[in-house]
Amino acid sequence: MSRDHAIRVASPTEQTNPHTRDIDLLPTLDILQLLNREDRTVPEAVGRVLPELAEAVDLAVTALRSGGRVHYVGAGTSGRLAVLDAAELIPTFNAPPDWFIAHQAGGPEAYQQAVENAEDDEDAGAREIRAQGSDKDFVLGLAASGRTPYVLSALAAAKEVGATTALLTSNPNPGEVPADVVIAADTGPEPISGSTRMKAGTAQKLVLTAFSTTVMIKLGRVYSNFMVSMLATNAKLRGRTINILQEATGASESACAEALTAAGDDLKTALVHLLSGADVERSAAALAVADGQVRDALRALES
Image (cartoon, rainbow, N blue to C red; front, side, top):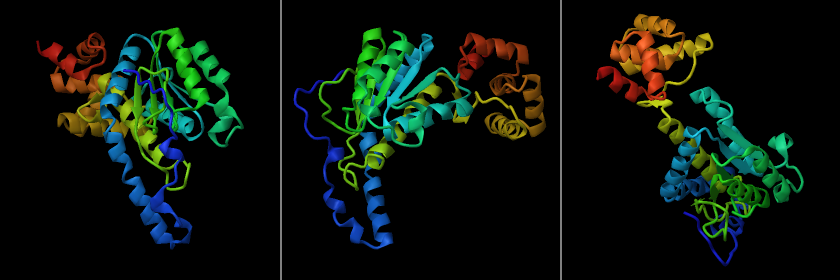
């Protein structure tokens, strides 16, 4: 659901935190304890926006199942966190590299250092989405203040091409934004005034990790709590996949190794083979029909 606000007030992230005044006068340990107390408020703020986050997850799952993609759009810390999350999905869940696309204001140069005026470049944000977006896509904008021009213009362009959209912010009153869902994790004033790499950044990391992990779970890339879509491309990963097979099935190490070899190092096929007793060919076929969902494949083989 969209959230429209006629009056914009100062973002809490830009306000002065009364709890950390004169923090520069404190001993080292006291500084760390004070920062830690502030950090502990972040998970609670994220917890309050889980209903909105669930809406965003469902929109992303719909997009990916229809052949679309998920776009992350951010500037500064927000963009770097988005790049990190998108990159980690490939080795963790064997996600296709074009499923999650991260757009960083200022481009790759901004991964390590600030690019002057990049976050204010409205044309760049809109241009990237118009060039790469489609009506099948889902676009998640990240802006601690809720007002970053690069991000808002990208969301507006996404609406123009027919994509679904969401905004992740730490401002509970971002004003009128072009988003179907607003995820406003109100983390309050930063310990160091305006430094949104702190609590707001932590909230973004928590939300992104939960968001993308849940999307992967919904798409069948997890069975129970195991990463079952990873491919055994080296000795270390082969050992990890065998351990996963042992824990998930209770089979011996040798049986799991044999199953993995028979399945061409495809962990998911080996898992269905061991759990169902069906041969590797039938297991792979059941997974294909079940769109990669292990439990659905098992039910089909049992019927």
